[in-house]
Length: 220
Image (tube, rainbow, N blue to C red):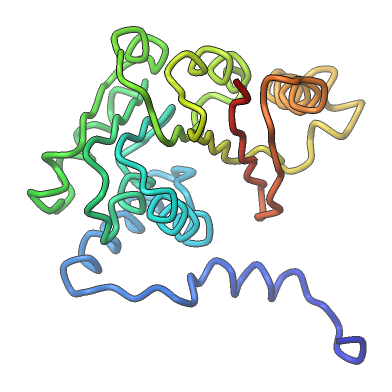
Protein backbone atom coordinates (compact mmCIF):
# COMPACT_ATOMS: atom_id res chain seq x y z
CA UNK A 1 0.00 0.00 0.00
CA UNK A 2 1.97 2.94 -1.32
CA UNK A 3 -0.20 5.76 0.01
CA UNK A 4 0.09 4.81 3.69
CA UNK A 5 3.37 5.05 5.68
CA UNK A 6 4.83 1.90 7.18
CA UNK A 7 5.47 2.22 10.91
CA UNK A 8 7.77 -0.46 12.30
CA UNK A 9 6.79 0.61 15.81
CA UNK A 10 3.13 -0.05 15.02
CA UNK A 11 4.04 -3.34 13.35
CA UNK A 12 6.01 -4.55 16.39
CA UNK A 13 3.23 -3.47 18.74
CA UNK A 14 0.64 -5.39 16.72
CA UNK A 15 2.89 -8.44 16.54
CA UNK A 16 3.56 -8.44 20.29
CA UNK A 17 -0.16 -8.24 21.00
CA UNK A 18 -0.56 -11.86 19.76
CA UNK A 19 -3.63 -10.74 17.80
CA UNK A 20 -5.10 -14.22 17.28
CA UNK A 21 -4.59 -15.59 20.82
CA UNK A 22 -7.16 -15.67 23.60
CA UNK A 23 -6.96 -17.29 27.03
CA UNK A 24 -9.29 -19.17 29.30
CA UNK A 25 -9.47 -17.93 32.89
CA UNK A 26 -7.04 -20.65 33.97
CA UNK A 27 -4.61 -19.86 31.17
CA UNK A 28 -4.90 -16.14 31.88
CA UNK A 29 -3.96 -16.60 35.55
CA UNK A 30 -0.76 -18.42 34.58
CA UNK A 31 0.04 -15.99 31.78
CA UNK A 32 -0.51 -12.93 33.98
CA UNK A 33 1.74 -14.38 36.69
CA UNK A 34 4.47 -14.87 34.11
CA UNK A 35 4.11 -11.31 32.85
CA UNK A 36 4.37 -10.11 36.45
CA UNK A 37 7.54 -12.13 36.98
CA UNK A 38 9.02 -10.84 33.76
CA UNK A 39 8.54 -7.28 34.99
CA UNK A 40 9.66 -7.80 38.60
CA UNK A 41 12.75 -9.83 37.67
CA UNK A 42 13.51 -7.78 34.56
CA UNK A 43 13.85 -11.16 32.85
CA UNK A 44 14.16 -11.47 29.05
CA UNK A 45 11.39 -14.03 28.60
CA UNK A 46 9.90 -14.61 25.15
CA UNK A 47 7.31 -12.05 24.18
CA UNK A 48 3.86 -12.88 22.89
CA UNK A 49 4.90 -12.63 19.24
CA UNK A 50 7.61 -15.28 19.45
CA UNK A 51 5.56 -17.26 21.98
CA UNK A 52 2.62 -17.47 19.57
CA UNK A 53 5.01 -18.66 16.88
CA UNK A 54 6.42 -21.38 19.16
CA UNK A 55 2.90 -22.55 19.93
CA UNK A 56 1.79 -22.61 16.30
CA UNK A 57 4.99 -24.18 14.98
CA UNK A 58 5.17 -26.98 17.57
CA UNK A 59 1.59 -27.99 16.76
CA UNK A 60 2.22 -27.79 13.03
CA UNK A 61 5.21 -30.17 13.14
CA UNK A 62 3.47 -32.41 15.71
CA UNK A 63 6.42 -32.22 18.09
CA UNK A 64 6.44 -34.80 20.87
CA UNK A 65 9.82 -34.11 22.44
CA UNK A 66 11.15 -30.58 23.02
CA UNK A 67 14.43 -29.45 24.57
CA UNK A 68 15.17 -25.92 25.76
CA UNK A 69 18.63 -24.44 26.23
CA UNK A 70 17.77 -21.67 28.67
CA UNK A 71 14.29 -21.82 30.20
CA UNK A 72 14.06 -19.26 32.98
CA UNK A 73 10.87 -19.87 34.96
CA UNK A 74 9.10 -21.62 32.08
CA UNK A 75 7.87 -18.81 29.83
CA UNK A 76 8.55 -20.55 26.54
CA UNK A 77 7.29 -23.87 27.94
CA UNK A 78 3.93 -22.18 28.51
CA UNK A 79 3.70 -21.47 24.79
CA UNK A 80 4.91 -24.90 23.68
CA UNK A 81 2.28 -26.57 25.88
CA UNK A 82 -0.50 -24.07 25.16
CA UNK A 83 -3.47 -26.20 24.10
CA UNK A 84 -1.05 -28.75 22.73
CA UNK A 85 -1.74 -32.35 23.74
CA UNK A 86 0.81 -33.85 21.34
CA UNK A 87 3.87 -32.96 23.43
CA UNK A 88 4.94 -35.91 25.57
CA UNK A 89 8.01 -34.35 27.20
CA UNK A 90 9.60 -30.92 27.34
CA UNK A 91 13.05 -30.62 28.88
CA UNK A 92 13.76 -27.29 30.54
CA UNK A 93 17.28 -26.28 31.55
CA UNK A 94 18.35 -23.23 33.52
CA UNK A 95 21.69 -22.34 35.13
CA UNK A 96 20.33 -19.56 37.34
CA UNK A 97 19.58 -21.13 40.70
CA UNK A 98 16.91 -18.62 41.77
CA UNK A 99 14.51 -19.24 38.90
CA UNK A 100 13.37 -22.76 39.75
CA UNK A 101 11.48 -21.53 42.81
CA UNK A 102 9.60 -19.07 40.60
CA UNK A 103 8.79 -21.89 38.18
CA UNK A 104 7.40 -23.95 41.07
CA UNK A 105 5.30 -21.04 42.32
CA UNK A 106 3.37 -20.71 39.07
CA UNK A 107 -0.15 -22.19 38.77
CA UNK A 108 0.69 -24.85 36.21
CA UNK A 109 -1.88 -27.41 35.16
CA UNK A 110 -1.14 -30.85 36.63
CA UNK A 111 -1.24 -32.30 33.11
CA UNK A 112 1.49 -29.87 32.03
CA UNK A 113 3.71 -30.47 35.06
CA UNK A 114 3.71 -34.19 34.27
CA UNK A 115 5.23 -33.39 30.87
CA UNK A 116 7.87 -30.95 32.13
CA UNK A 117 11.35 -32.10 33.14
CA UNK A 118 13.05 -29.09 34.75
CA UNK A 119 16.83 -29.40 35.15
CA UNK A 120 18.47 -26.74 37.26
CA UNK A 121 21.94 -26.78 35.73
CA UNK A 122 23.87 -26.75 32.49
CA UNK A 123 22.01 -27.69 29.30
CA UNK A 124 25.15 -29.38 27.96
CA UNK A 125 25.16 -31.65 31.01
CA UNK A 126 21.48 -32.52 30.64
CA UNK A 127 21.96 -33.29 26.95
CA UNK A 128 24.79 -35.71 27.75
CA UNK A 129 22.39 -38.06 29.51
CA UNK A 130 19.67 -37.86 26.88
CA UNK A 131 19.45 -40.69 24.38
CA UNK A 132 16.10 -39.95 22.76
CA UNK A 133 15.68 -37.96 19.59
CA UNK A 134 14.36 -34.41 19.87
CA UNK A 135 11.76 -32.85 17.58
CA UNK A 136 12.27 -29.19 18.51
CA UNK A 137 15.21 -27.50 20.22
CA UNK A 138 14.89 -23.96 21.51
CA UNK A 139 18.22 -22.17 21.97
CA UNK A 140 17.64 -19.16 24.20
CA UNK A 141 20.37 -19.20 26.84
CA UNK A 142 23.89 -17.79 27.01
CA UNK A 143 24.52 -16.13 23.66
CA UNK A 144 28.21 -17.02 23.73
CA UNK A 145 27.24 -20.73 23.72
CA UNK A 146 24.69 -20.67 20.90
CA UNK A 147 26.96 -22.14 18.24
CA UNK A 148 28.56 -24.67 20.57
CA UNK A 149 25.16 -25.97 21.64
CA UNK A 150 23.88 -26.11 18.06
CA UNK A 151 26.80 -28.35 17.15
CA UNK A 152 26.40 -30.42 20.30
CA UNK A 153 22.68 -31.12 19.90
CA UNK A 154 23.00 -32.38 16.33
CA UNK A 155 23.51 -35.96 17.54
CA UNK A 156 20.09 -35.89 19.21
CA UNK A 157 18.23 -34.78 16.10
CA UNK A 158 16.49 -36.60 13.27
CA UNK A 159 15.92 -35.48 9.69
CA UNK A 160 12.67 -33.67 10.54
CA UNK A 161 13.95 -31.94 13.68
CA UNK A 162 14.10 -28.16 13.92
CA UNK A 163 16.25 -25.86 16.04
CA UNK A 164 14.77 -22.48 16.93
CA UNK A 165 17.37 -19.85 17.87
CA UNK A 166 15.86 -16.88 19.67
CA UNK A 167 17.46 -13.41 19.80
CA UNK A 168 19.65 -14.29 16.84
CA UNK A 169 19.68 -10.66 15.68
CA UNK A 170 20.93 -9.47 19.08
CA UNK A 171 19.98 -5.89 18.26
CA UNK A 172 22.19 -6.09 15.19
CA UNK A 173 25.28 -5.73 17.39
CA UNK A 174 27.15 -8.42 15.44
CA UNK A 175 26.91 -6.24 12.31
CA UNK A 176 28.82 -3.42 14.00
CA UNK A 177 32.50 -4.16 13.33
CA UNK A 178 33.63 -1.87 16.14
CA UNK A 179 31.33 -3.44 18.72
CA UNK A 180 31.70 -7.08 17.74
CA UNK A 181 35.45 -6.94 18.18
CA UNK A 182 35.11 -6.44 21.93
CA UNK A 183 31.74 -7.86 23.01
CA UNK A 184 31.78 -11.63 23.55
CA UNK A 185 28.08 -12.15 22.83
CA UNK A 186 28.22 -10.13 19.61
CA UNK A 187 31.37 -11.97 18.53
CA UNK A 188 29.72 -15.35 19.05
CA UNK A 189 26.45 -14.33 17.38
CA UNK A 190 28.48 -13.24 14.35
CA UNK A 191 30.30 -16.59 14.37
CA UNK A 192 26.89 -18.31 14.45
CA UNK A 193 25.67 -16.43 11.38
CA UNK A 194 28.96 -16.97 9.54
CA UNK A 195 28.77 -20.69 10.34
CA UNK A 196 25.19 -21.00 9.07
CA UNK A 197 26.14 -19.19 5.88
CA UNK A 198 29.10 -21.48 5.15
CA UNK A 199 27.87 -24.86 6.42
CA UNK A 200 26.53 -27.69 4.32
CA UNK A 201 25.32 -29.54 7.42
CA UNK A 202 22.38 -27.27 8.19
CA UNK A 203 19.63 -25.45 6.32
CA UNK A 204 18.46 -22.19 7.92
CA UNK A 205 16.24 -19.16 7.56
CA UNK A 206 16.11 -15.88 9.48
CA UNK A 207 12.75 -14.48 10.63
CA UNK A 208 12.79 -10.75 11.42
CA UNK A 209 11.06 -10.60 14.78
CA UNK A 210 12.23 -7.61 16.84
CA UNK A 211 15.41 -9.36 18.00
CA UNK A 212 15.40 -12.11 15.41
CA UNK A 213 14.54 -15.80 15.29
CA UNK A 214 16.55 -18.23 13.20
CA UNK A 215 15.15 -21.64 12.20
CA UNK A 216 17.68 -24.37 11.52
CA UNK A 217 17.22 -27.94 10.35
CA UNK A 218 19.89 -30.61 10.06
CA UNK A 219 20.89 -32.04 6.70
CA UNK A 220 21.84 -35.71 6.87
